[in-house]
Image (cartoon, rainbow, N blue to C red; front, top):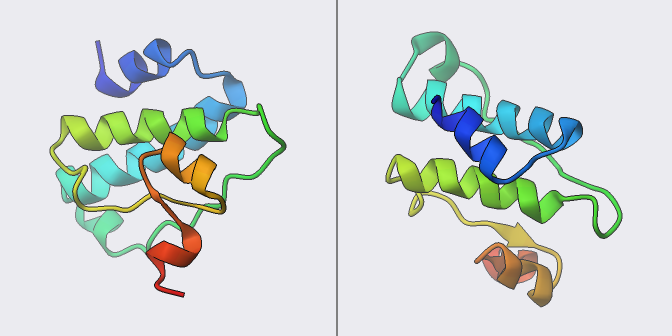
Length: 101
């Protein structure tokens, strides 16, 4: 089974979560793993996942982290979140700490 599909199934992503996951995971795979020139030339992906508590933002981030772990790239990014509790859920840092503010 394709990696993205397996991870999406394992995390039981809903339709909206799946869209965000596919965009992010595809960018990582095409640009960083397969090194497809058309993707490398594109600007960096800037995406803001928003929504009230319980909508699955952390769930999407954790699914993306699984893709990065699979390809040995989990050391190449830093997850940032607005609060300490949110940061701990994604094994990251607060925005202020991550940006040294």
